[in-house]
Length: 124
Image 1 (cartoon, rainbow, N blue to C red):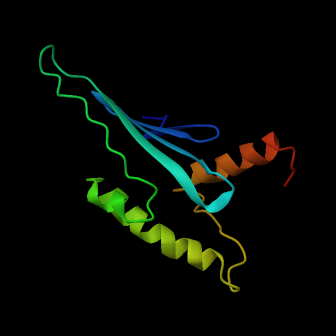
Image 2: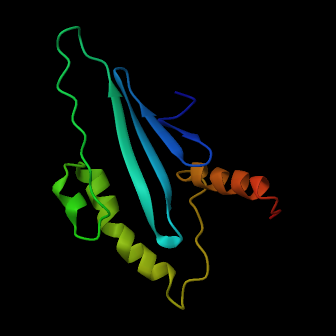
């Protein structure tokens, strides 16, 4: 429990583990476009011998045609994805200066940026 509910591996891999499965998120750059990324979701799950389901791969496309909406991501991810476009627009507004993370709930984000700055040789 001290390790938390998700593990982050620098720079772009998140594991969400449970007793019989693990969910992986990985985000990668989409060429030189800072407003897009390749977002992968993978799951490994244990099944009883002989109870394994047929393996299926779903491709959400590049998102430009809303194809990702046809996939069953679950309520939390659907809500997150719906917010992303508006958040990106807000971050580009003249009023936006900087984002501050919640020091308790978003400690992983703060740590990521600390490690990233160290990795890139940029002191705070």
